[in-house]
Image (cartoon, rainbow, N blue to C red; front, side):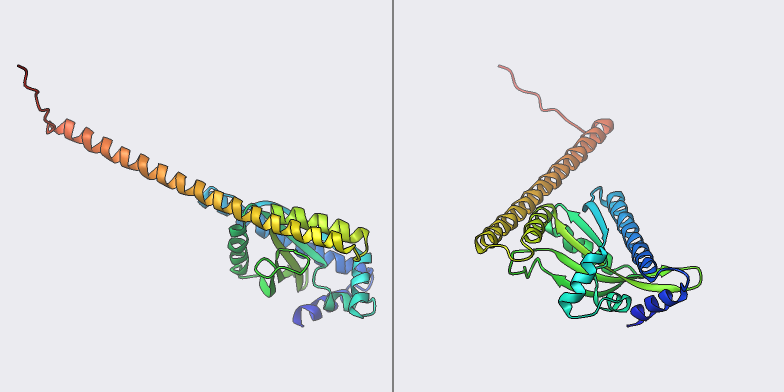
Length: 249
């Protein structure tokens, strides 16, 4: 409730500014802060491990129409206060990864940020929706520093693989076209596609692990060759290598 009260207080403090614009300003600022944090984490991972867990980052602010529609679906009146209190995904950041292992690695890194508060987690990867939807959702609160106050503002972070994002984007377009009432055969085919996507993710993860193992083995072999070369070179320098002469008849 603290964050919601701070947002409401911030809205009231801008008496000469439209409340809607103020709310969007706060959520947009929070979204930018989270995006910057994630970019820094990705750069750090590249610096330390020579690997980027994040393929790309998408951000969006929910449209007024979507917010009003969601409030009505929840049974609430359309008001700024209800938007702040009951709509958790006004500001959204989506992380697209290559492999499922990256998802949980990123979630842990985000959870370790001292100035981000994780409010809730929904793991739709281990527990997919009935439709077949898979993604990892984190609702976080991030402090937005204004000129005279600090406002904790909610941002929803979604983490998914490239394959999951492809499926989810297609599913969203289909259900948007049918306004949530797609024919059963389409829903069934989407669920089948979701299974294929899961199998693809598993295959690609296994392939990546096999590649990494080959890289480790090759590096180990090269290190051993270097050690042997150094040993041989040292012994030659010390004159301790003896060659056995062959007898000739």
